[in-house]
Image 1 (spheres, one colour):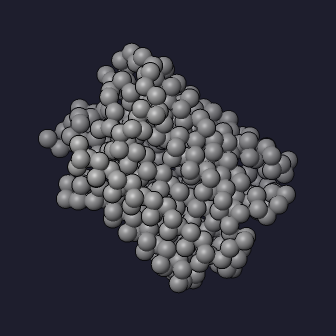
Image 2: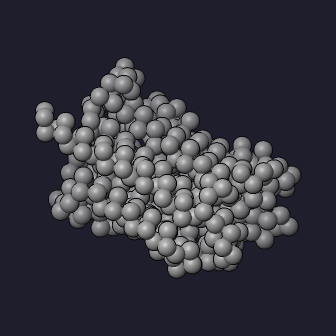
Length: 394
């Protein structure tokens, strides 16, 4: 039976579009966050701090968010944090009006909190369908991000001069997108798994980490975000400020990158069938290696475009593979604990990478930044080999 015939297919569609509309505020921040930071930050090394703080907000709140979902359910928690996101757009507008870097960073943190909630939609989608369709459901939610890839940067540029304060109007448009997302989400019908009473798991994170496959799932998601965040966060400043490319070209590159993060999800189910989850991980790492090679050799607009597209494809293969592997690495009663630990680790590493990008972009050349990405790739290969060896031994 195809997923279109599955009882939860409507839920998956609702979650895909709703998360994409709500997530547009995050892609708006990807483009505007560092550019606003460059205007407001007291030091050049802090220009990417708003993006890093947004990611840190995701990392620090993902475990409380998953526990909130355990108590209130996926739908109620998502609607609650969409309301928070709308209010945070108002806070960001106030920060821009007051020219306050501190207040803008606070808004960035709260956007990270909202992002932690939106990211759980992939698990809600997987729970809405049978086991045989979980990878496809996760891919569909990821594919919905193509909407965010277009809308976020577009409203960032369209709203830039909507008021007398640069980018203030962007957050007005962002709040409107979030409200549309909440309206659509109101049609979501929680699965029986979600409405069931969930007791708090007593399993420790250390116990979960003893499973090599859980470590591989976590490593795949972490490396996907470390390299993607490190390169993507530094791209707007490198392109626009250092290499003199226009804001329109920079916007196009970021849009293409975010689109490339989600477009492969349309063919991911087929690739999973022929390559397996671990084969997809290797293809993702190969895309990252190609990103490094092109970024090292070419800093033209076309060069940035090609490397950022490959960066997006590599991220998709690694992150979807890790997400698809995760449910098979723990018991049913451990799902909220496992999801929380997994996402906490992933977004903690992403926050470190994003903040490091702000430091690196002013101290290192773009070529040196590219070479630094070899380290996490090598570590990921080591985890893959270790997991295969342990599984073969067992």
